[in-house]
Length: 308
Image (cartoon, rainbow, N blue to C red):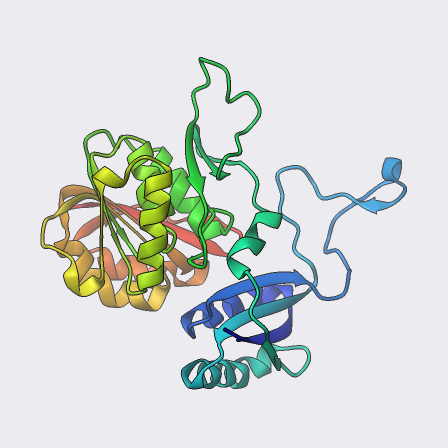
């Protein structure tokens, strides 16, 4: 099917909020690229003939970014794209553009930049069939999630997913029941199962996300310990670990429901939150959870806590 592509050029300071707004508007995918071939604050490497060389362990962000969002090319998608363009026009450095695209295998394009990546101490997320260097050794301590997210994106490369993966890696999940609310590709539920959780329930309103989650669970050999459900189908069984990587607005609405689904002493991890939103979201959960200080990466935050 054809797609609608909404493109905006923004200053880097606006990138996180524009990306979140497009996801909230229903974009099927959001990608960021440099708009002017102009690197942000980074030194030149004289040995490389003046080629831009980012500092180690940093993710460069260009001064001007082109943000591209894909919407379904139907009445609802067109209305959502037009509304997003109007709402975000004030943040754009040039008028937003809308274009119709012929169908392409978008679910495969993520492979161009997807490489084996470690999160936390031992958790690796890898494209299906790839392994990091040294993984063949008998004493290699890593835990691998093979991932092919399809159209339900989620490879761990977005800061919010990376924060959640590292948080899961730091928990003792042995024998625990895990709830992944807003599962997308299922990466968090599957990672929890690979890290030793006894069972996981992956929840999403998008049937395509649930299909991708099941496919990825089969590829990782954990489908026998995984259940999937739409939000209205979630059973009342409390979980020992609740993780939700969504956006601030739905997390605020879900606070009573997620609290009810958390067993006494359960661990809570919330992301999809811009750093300036963390205080408000933490307050919404503080009645039921002992909340810890937010952990941030770039402009995004992870909130964690323990059920009272």
